[in-house]
Every structure is written in structure tokens, then in C-alpha cells.
Image (cartoon, rainbow, N blue to C red; front, side, top):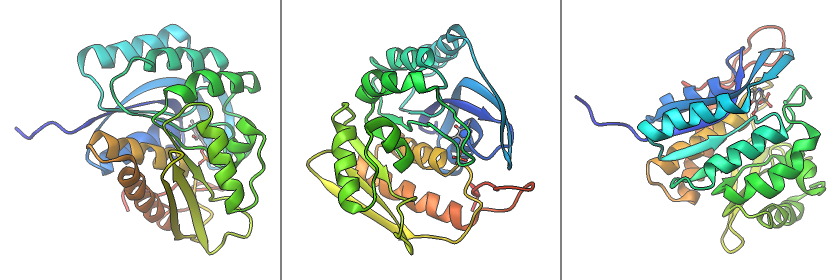
Amino acid sequence: MTSRPPLVLTVAGSDSGGGAGIQADLKTMLALGVHGMSVITAVTAQNSLGVQGAWELPEEAVRAQYRAVVDDIGVQAVKTGMLASAALVETVAELLAPVDAPVVVDPVGVSKHGDSLLAASALDSVRTKLLPVATVATPNLDEVAQLTGIEVADEAGMRRAADAILAYGPRWALIKGGHLPGAAPEAVDLLTDGTEEHWLRAPRYDNRHTHGTGCTLASAVASGLAKGLTVPEAVRQAKAYVTGAIAAGFALGAGIGPVDHAW
Ligand code: PLP
């Protein structure tokens, strides 16, 4: 018998193409040596060309999956991704408020293809209910704009964005500057709790097959936290993992392929 791996739960949507969402989360967790579990919030019909359809699950199904995992098995870290609607954002925030484990919130808004994964009416619930229960919130610059109204154009803007996100209550903000204009040849992220500031820089790869990067990064952070790493160290290792996965991203179908979780 081998010892039990750390326990990580993802609360997110399914991507039928296997590149993002629950599928990316579980592959990341396997690659990083933790036991991945899932609460599925929505099912998408999706491939390399985009999202063809999305169906959210009933609140009751989300609650039942969560209770099944937490009441028997337990969790050492939680990651949230696509939550689809205001009702599901509020349900998940209520479930996670009392949890005695770090919570990584990826405030998923719009996919790389421009498909909406969160109703506009849910933004306020993300701000006021979900972000307050987060140990780390991991918005990209589009999500920063949706949540705070700040259009980030440079590193000073990333700092203002971090402060605006922290004002909603997460312990740490990880602002992902991957889409920063003119930031090539580096992908720059800012991690801060309002006191410490960590700038993370990695080479930017000229690879269009990046489907699932946000899900992968947040799941890697949750995996590191479940292993007992500090937030800065979990984020540093997660960034190294996602950078390698982007470098190894591969073509699939006729559109944008996934990052490679097994690089
Ligand atoms: N589909 C689902 C179910 C997701 O959760 C996400 C991202 O969180 C995406 C698609 C979008 O992935 P990407 O923006 O990397 O294409």
C-alpha cells in the first residue's frame, strides 16, 4: 500500500474536447501527484473551434456532489472554475465559506474563442460572494476588466488591478498578464497580498495551442497548496508547470489545441 496523495477538489465545467475545464484540472492534478476530485457545474459541447453549447447543472446536483466528496473523503485544497450563473456562484460560495482548506478561485468569464462561460448577471455575485472566500484569485486581464472596470495596459496597471481585486476580499491576487500588449518576449504575472509583491516572469512561447492555460494554472496552484506549499511557492511552481505545458501545447482539430499536461 502506498501513502495517500493530497486531496484536491475542482468545482468547474466539463470541456468535451478535453483541453480545459474539469478535464484540464484532473490531468494537471494527476501530473502533479495529487488525488483529483470533481464537482461538475456545467457541461459544454466544445472542441478546438469553440463552445457549441453549454448546460448548467441544477443547484441540487452541485450541492450533492460537494457533500458527497467533503463529508466522506475531505479536501486539502479547492479550485473553482466555470460557474455559469449567479445561482451557482452563490451556491458554491456558500458551500466553500466554512471549508478548512485553501480555495483558489479562477473567475472564469469568457473562453479564448470569445464564448461566454459566465452570465453577465453573475459578476456581482463573483465580486461580493465568491472572491471573499478565496485564498488566491487568479483573473486574467479580460476578467480583471469585467470585474473591476480597469483596462490594464502596463505593469503599473497590473498593480492597480491587484489592489481592486484584493478589495473584494481574497487573501492573495494573482493577476495574469499573459495578454499584456507589448509584454513579449515575457509573460508577466503579479502575485500580491497587498503587502508582499512577487513578479513572476516566464518566456512567452509563440504557440497558439494554449487552450486550458487558466484552468491548468489554477489547478496547479491548488495542488501545491494541498501539498503544504506557501502561496508564493505554490504559484511559482504552478507557473513553471504551465509554462512547460504551453511550450508543449499541440495541434488538435482545426482550431486551437490544448496545453500538454504530461510534458
Ligand atoms: N471551457 C471550460 C469548461 C472552462 O472552464 C474554460 C476555462 O476556464 C474554458 C473552456 C476556456 O479555456 P480557454 O480560455 O483556455 O480556451
